[in-house]
Image (tube, rainbow, N blue to C red):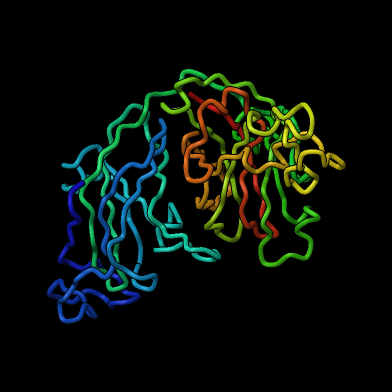
Length: 361
């Protein structure tokens, strides 16, 4: 990956700099000194699906109060980017809200913004991208151009939800609504309203809730496709007043916990609070279950929910779901999918719709 390039010209930013002067310089740019206060490098594709690419980068310098915005430019090739062709797509914080920050706001941990997902792409297509970091004086640091080719379209499809629900939902007010005018596909969708959730009663300004499908018992036979391109896809409409900057998702497979059997000592069954039972201490213990054994899950974390009343399609490779920092072992998927969930802090008046959940490969 090539080194970052730091542009010498300032990008107009009237909020900080005032209007450009007649000579083409910027007012407030320290007498023409436009050394970027935020510097970025190492842009690369962390992963890609047929219609989306997750671009990641490094920040070499900058503090949370010095960034105005990240901006990602996407084109057919490097020449198109450098020419500034009309067809070059510019992805800004208006598209992906996390691009307005060096670190995700409103979180309790250190969650730096070092990646973003660009959607609406074509399968089996070459793309070139570069990232611009614009600081609070309008000075810009630009990465070298990175390249990625999206995978071809999938040839197989395992339906997790499409009109008909398998298993059950949690919380219980995550319900199936039959209304083809509000569905992404088919006739029905899943809807969640925090104002109807007893667990969110009296909670302000936001309420954290995981929206879960459990006991799916969906057979999967992915083989090498797990590592070579299998992905989960769903349509999400998050009609919410706040932007949930940090969200997680998880998948649970049957292998790790639901295969428990035999005696308590043999199965290391779980107590009601989820702790393993000691050999010979079986009172109150039962077979392990995915709900009481978190090691069953693989997590995709720190993604930003984009507020919109309209649906937006989300795609994540299965290998992007991690446990202890590593991808879930591919063999676990062969026992079938037990659960699917997304979770974040929803505002009380939000209306969340989820539809057409699939595992494609």
